[in-house]
Image 1 (cartoon, one colour):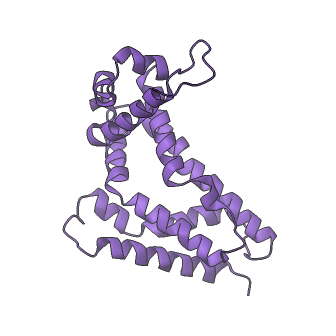
Image 2: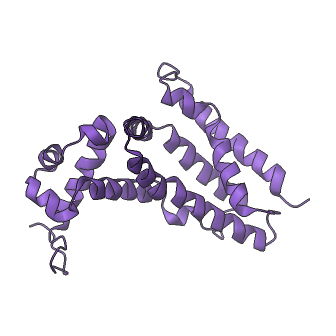
Length: 214
């Protein structure tokens, strides 16, 4: 039997299993086909539900896209990733953040979304880029900035500008690897994943050399 939400007021999704199936289908199709190439009919078919069910849960494709991006970001980069832990050093925490971000930036799924967004912006649909920015990079920038600010307050880092330091840290993770994957230049490189991990380690080492108190 499908799980049913207790809150069944007007406009509220009643079947959370169907909602989850719709989001999974949407995440896959938006990556494969882009925003414009993904129809609500295709999402409904992929989720095994009717198109009316898709609309009853999400209202329109913009909302579905935002929810798909939001869920993906929270699954891949959960909030607890950016929190200090008694059993981890600052370097260990930064390395875990770096590895997660670096691997996500260069993953086929993320690259597919970035390519689709670039195409949408070129075709006069910058709203899709704005939605992705708000649910993805803007969110993680703020979470990382908060973590760095807390570390600075504790004396573990010397940061005149935590917001700028967060941007610098995330930029270091890209190196040339993100562009190589984006442009399709790394498909035949068997050492690519190793290079992603090595770049993450190097980024953390450089960041700490710049901002650890002397």
